[in-house]
Length: 380
Image 1: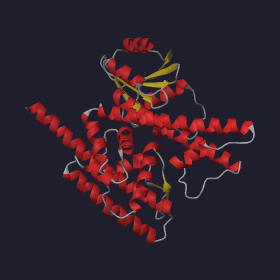
Image 2: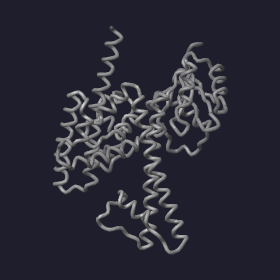
Image 3: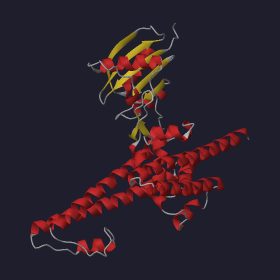
Image 4: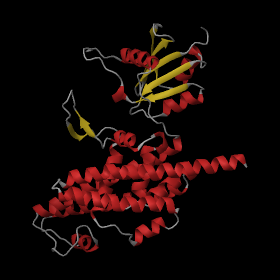
């Protein structure tokens, strides 16, 4: 039993890690090992104490990220990051501590009741952080514009109806405004400066995303380029889908990806009664956001504009064929649901769900092509 598998559960926090070990076997001992500092030296000492051979470690995904996973892999320890929302919970259990959580993780890990999440490599995670920083900047821009527009509304200053909101003429009109009272003028300058600052920040982040995509691994770059064949999926949206979902081929069927992204309807059925409700909204909210934004594009008739032709120029015919099929199918679906009187938000949700299926088809096709190319090079 010296080389028997031991299952370790870690309840990870910013400063501490609660550790528990479950011995192999259904009735094997489950014991607490105490709490250690969340530092590389303490983790290395724990691995030396337990021995890396036969060690299986798990912890819940959370705000501490994947740094602990990468440290354990470097130490030669098998590690899994599990989905916290899918950890079994006893309905009558009203006591929750770090030590008890670690014991529960170790016991459930041994029983095979935990669901592991896909862990990106450090380069992939860095690109995802950059994309999310750009999304945060867009939210800040919306808030800054709202503050400025509502200030002007309260002051009775309104642009002409022909002026496009936040266009060049609109910005020139705002820069030329003057107020009688000095406090209002200071407020106007501050709000306008914040709008300019956020716009410059977004432009800087988008340039950084372009540079990062150009330097990304060939498979990730190929997936990003391929997804742009779809209508309504430009570089930022394609990059968001690629970095948030990761490896598309880990889903063997599109419905699994749809469920993972939370765009399938919830269900409460029993016996002969079957009741479906709103979408589950589980999983990655960043993916749902860009999907819903892209779904609105399919209310227009199928066609290839200048921008779309440019994005499809260097792509293989199979990818373009899938994108064209998506245009025709999703537009017919949009028109059919709208004709039946469905609310526009529900129509867009249905289109987003089917669009995700085409995203899966294109990405998996490209990943398979990339893997075949690598195998051919290795064989040669």
